Length: 255
Image (cartoon, rainbow, N blue to C red; front, side, top):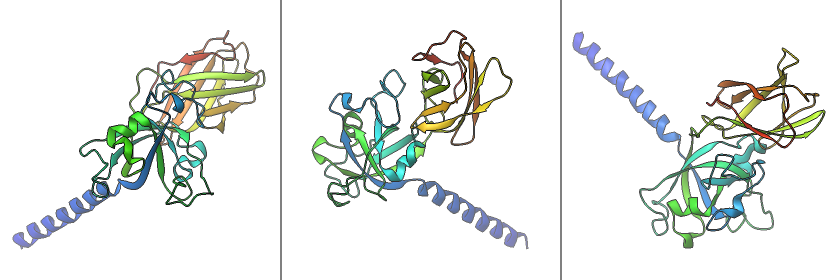
């Protein structure tokens, strides 16, 4: 009986281990990658997430524009993905043993004038990464143009605190939230002026830009940010009461 119990326990352990191992392997997904923006990645600045200078916003040149299937109407902005070139499918152009973690900072629009397998790489429902040229050349040769890849969502490592850039006018505050660590992409944001003890829910305007329709002039501003994994951080009094539209403020909080 004791041997039977030991055998049963071993079988259960094996099943659980195999299941967990399979789940871990399933995290990697298939897609393709191209590149844009020039050898210095200067052409990747700005973009559909609303980030301006990607260097000052905390993202650098390890970035990519995502296809419709991945961009998710801007909800993926700021998220990080680990990418490897699939050398089993394209050994000629892939740089074996390499990988890179990029941040989603832009949108790769579909091109319905071209077939999805010949130029319309970002057409739905294809998952596709149009990487900065330096990032692409980390995993593949320049002459490849396009390569098959494996990718998975990973955590983001940032230096310093979350950054808030405020634009708009009077009853319209448009806040760009950048340099976000952890999950990287944001699901909810709240704002609070110093004249109130209530948190106001902000709405996503576009990309990483969130809006408030309250009059918050001459008040210090606090923000509460929730990332896509459900974690929440609160940045109190990030902007002083004499803040002006067009200014950026770096908090002392991070995921």
